Image: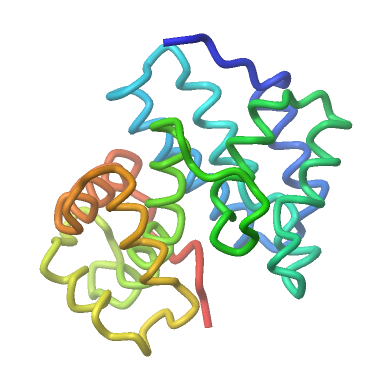
Length: 199
């Protein structure tokens, strides 16, 4: 596989994230998706783990400042990332996860982009479910519990089930496989609090 260049270090990416996000919740979500992406990179594209991680860290860079304009999500971010030295491939990968909001943005094509699309909202659903459990831990969380929460549209209502289904289809995975793999990814770094979709 080709070597992917983000144009910035992880440290610079984190500084950029913190410059545009003041809510700890949004920073935590970026870190959760970063760690999830790194987990999958180690399986599918280990040479580019750093790139996958930075994509995950910055994927929602502009959401806190512009959440009232979902169709512009990642378009504002593109200018900020470019100004910080980010490469076109970094911007493209980040923008591919919002092509459901804006059909003019690139569709997910690379494995990395498909995994971001499929898991970004799912990590939020898992995080929201985990904090409802007595253990408040993902370590004892199972697919059957996630399926119940997925079917309950009132639970974490801001999480798009359609995006998660579409992401699984893009990857050629059954929903159960996507659920199982994403839970295992989150268990690999064991977050213990909700990081997305708090209501």
